[in-house]
Length: 146
Ligand code: SF4
Ligand code: SF4
Image (cartoon, rainbow, N blue to C red; front, top):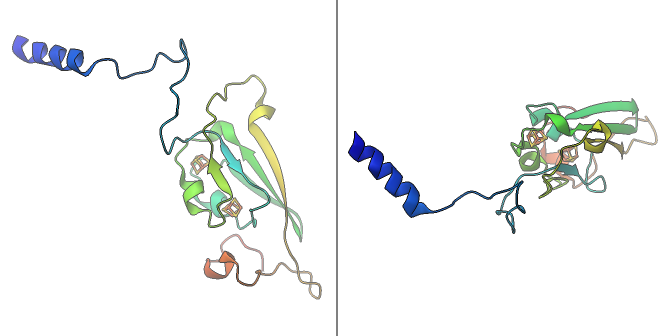
């Protein structure tokens, strides 16, 4: 019993300090590769497919269709568990988990966003259409208006 405890102590001493003193000291730099911080959507790349909202277990993304050709994605970052599923599923590379991690705030508005996505619609019938040669052609149409 005592022998095994001494062995544990020896292993701990031998491995040295493996944690950073943050927040008492500066955060470790550079951050490890693949670090998952604040989630961001690049609105220029987003096609409004809703894939990120479909896979997010914490319902960070709320999609609202305010008009036939106008989709709004609301982002509630306080719910995020940093699982990274949204980044994996976005075929347009529009979702990114940035290195930003100091997100504590007294104002919820700091971590909430509202993105406006223009959805192309047919000039004849007014309905949304799937852009030619876009990744949407290869995707299931869950969440996509026809
Ligand atoms: S999965 Fe990507 S393209 Fe689709 S709505 Fe989300 S951010 Fe936009
Ligand atoms: S990292 Fe996970 S919890 Fe956070 S927004 Fe993406 S899918 Fe949702």
